[in-house]
Each structure stands twice: as C-alpha cells, then as structure tokens.
Length: 284
Image (tube, rainbow, N blue to C red; front, side):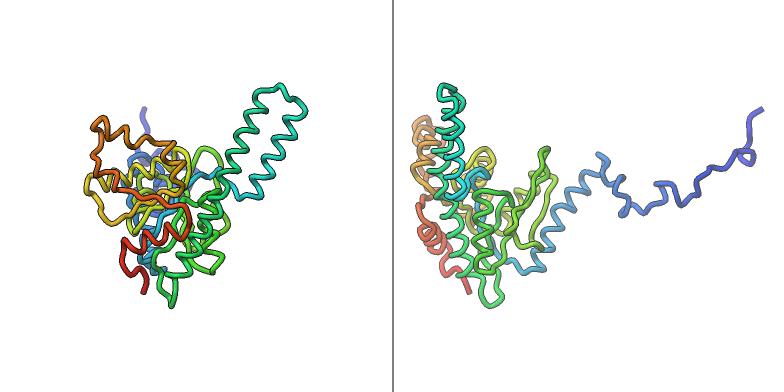
C-alpha cells in the first residue's frame, strides 16, 4: 500500500537549510551554473565600469608587454646565475641556451625602465587637481605591466590592473591602486574594459598576450570599429624583426595605408609626445 502525503516522513533538514531557500543573488553555487553565464558576463562588465566611474576615471592609456621582462638588476642576476650553472657543465646545450636567452632578456630589460618612466611622465602630467585622465591600465601582472603600474605609484597617481583568472596561480603586482585592481573570468569582457576608455595602446616587446591585444586593436582600427585609439610600438627594431609588415602589404593582405595605424617610439618621451599630439591638449 502506497503512502499518502500525510504518511511521508519529514526530512531531517528544515526548509531554511535547503539550497532552494537561498535568495538567488546570494546563492554563489547557483550563480556558477552554465545557464547563468549571461548573468555573470553582465556583472563582470558592470562591476569594473561602476567602480571606475566612482573613481572618476575619464580616460586611460593601455600599456602592454611581457610579464617575463624584468628590471635590469634582476635580469643581470639571472644572466650571472645562468653562466654559473653552465660553468659546471659547459657541454650541456640546454645550459648554453639558457645563457643566450638570459642575454636577450637583459637586452630587453631596458624596456622595464622605459615603461616605468612613461607611466611616471603621463601620470604626473595628467592626474592633477583631482582629474583622472590618461590613467595607466595594464594586465596587472609582473614585468612590463608591473613597471607601468610602478611608475604611477612613484608619483602617487592612480593606475588600474585588469587581472584574469588562469589555470596557474597569478597575483596582481603590488603597484596597482588597490581599489582599481580587478580580476576577470572572461577574456572578452577584460578586453572590452581595456579599450572602453582608452586613448592609446602602448605595446612593449611581449609574447602571445601582447600580440593578441595589439592585433585586436589594430583590427578594430582597420575595420572602423574604433578611431580613438593611437597605437604606439616601443622598440622599432624588435617589432620589425618580429612582424614582417611589408610582406602583408606585398601579398595584398593589408593595405599600404594600414601601416599608418601604428607608430614607433624608442623612449618614454617619444611615446607620450605621439599621444599628446594625436589627442591635442591632453590634460585639463
């Protein structure tokens, strides 16, 4: 004989202890469901936007570059260590390769100082009298990004870091303004925030991440999706060796005019002068 509703045994849990009783906006496990992805994307877009408005961030300059480029003193130490390790086994090709890489890393280390000086120059020029224009924004990591956030901190100015959750552990560098340090789940929303307020993208030597952001911005400029971002490549020798721009033109894959979508600079002052001229009088 089946049991009727009145014969069912009550649960050991009270109604308040079931997950269904938790209000939806407070149920973090519910918010992680696949079906809630559109909600998460919307929240991820909105939260940094509201905070930046509250902090009166009017415009930004995006600084990108390798997380693996260190300041000269650290790069010098790394080369010395590589040479010491190779001395114990001079016939080991892997050890010799590490020396070659360490030497090249030391060559690139100058860009850490350029990035830091650029940020210091821009931030001290534009963040005055409570205005927050041309605020430096980076990917929030080490290397070139750290240098840019550090330059702003040198002059007690604000800077932004847009970190991303990754399979391996990542921490924001210590120079980001704490209330402007964000963490993203979705690369697409993070990319939007890089460019929403951007007046310029300054790209230093870097790897896949730097190239990804650079080419996405160039594509937006080429297709007319944006016309407000000036692209500056720091280190002409590096970029021309890395990317055969003229080959793309020779094969008709891009227009000769597309080569006008970016500019070169070698120093912090050159990069800032390009941006200032492009935008007219840059600061209030």
